[in-house]
Length: 352
Ligand code: NAD
Image (cartoon, rainbow, N blue to C red; front, side, top):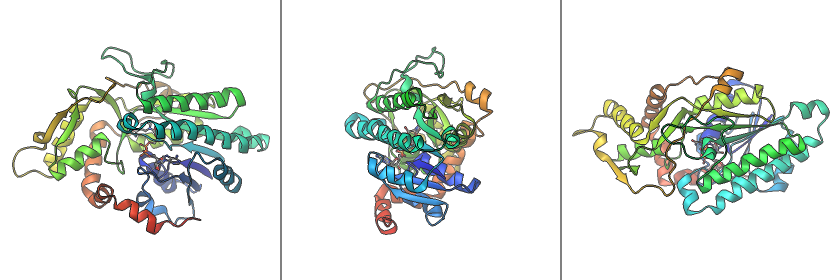
């Protein structure tokens, strides 16, 4: 069994669904179900005996100890986090609590459990920490892409707390010998993403006839990776990564925000034409985010060279799939937008 944290969130849920489709090894899914956790996404596997769900806060040391003792996982894949940069600007406390204190608490529980395993089990155990390229700070247009040796320079409360968690994970390997792996990935997009993030927000607002907000001049650059490719990379690193190492994951898809929004509008114009004009007419430039990093770009050659991983989707194919998914899954989007997904959790989830 593997223990996954944050498996009701965007990337975690995609990981859980992909994993259970592809192999027989069970998952213990540990998630607090914050606003970003949506059990509805996991409906296909909620009654699958290979999927055990535990509504637990990763800051709860006693609950984590009990889960490790009962389920004896051979690995941890740690997604749980507060993940939205804008929320971290308005309320950083939850980010410090979950991303730093929560990761520390999880590391402590993992270390206590791991230290009691026999030598063979200890050597085979893995703690994979899922992190972000935002820990490296901001690049100018001419800077080289982030590599695994780029110095950390986080600029938002979100990236600062993720950087703190990365450092704790590193320290647990160097100090205690815990077999850790860290992945730093670029921006993800795909099915089941909470519509506060750029791509699902633009799709939802476009269809609803609302404005499509773009920060500043729209020229901030991000590298984009389809979520299924990220999940495949994590499986690869979990299986074959070298303990103590970090791996950058990226899609070689540097795009300005305005390019992303234009591409979505063009896909929607083709799939669901408006009576008059284009979805591009709904674009509105809004006041820039404070401290908005200009450019992120990932050099993923280490992962590709050492482990043979390559993204299956280009930005064009991945985005076309994603737009189609949101158009075909309006019920999921509507439930999130109305808040009804929270009620669904309360009536369909019973504490063990
Ligand atoms: P998300 O916000 O969609 O999901 C986070 C999940 O963690 C939710 O299910 C939430 O309920 C759970 N959670 C939050 N606090 C918790 C706590 N204290 N205890 C237990 N569960 C808790 O996030 P995401 O976009 O799926 O990101 C997952 C991970 O990947 C994060 O660590 C994030 O930093 C990292 N990451 C995200 C991206 C991206 O583009 N989304 C890119 C690179 C790395």
